[in-house]
Length: 173
Image (cartoon, rainbow, N blue to C red; front, side):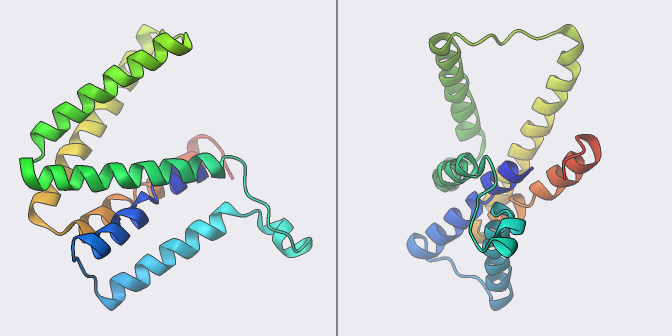
């Protein structure tokens, strides 16, 4: 759940880009929310026991991958936002998902990864694909009618659901 939270923090990059290059602005209250997000990311990334007992900063395992995902997804969503504003949401959705699929297929072949599955997993895989598709359609339509500086932070709150489900279903602490 921590890596998911860090990865979803891409919104920080998207918001900063929107302010710096798209001329978007947010209110004082939205700025406070942005600040809380930054503080939350920092606190979630640290092992608090070591910080308080040994007075040293120790990162939780996987933080580096979460940060890399955050930066890459930040730029992904910036580019996606610009594409959606120019082309609508459907063309970018089809092209991005197609190219992503090709890239993953090349990775599987080059890394010689086994991607076989069972028939019993197909309903769950289909449900995940359906949820992602509906989320993508909703996100794209939201960007057509509202500023990215508002839409992206709202869409990035999905780790709340992930954290709760990881706690309940996976017994993560």
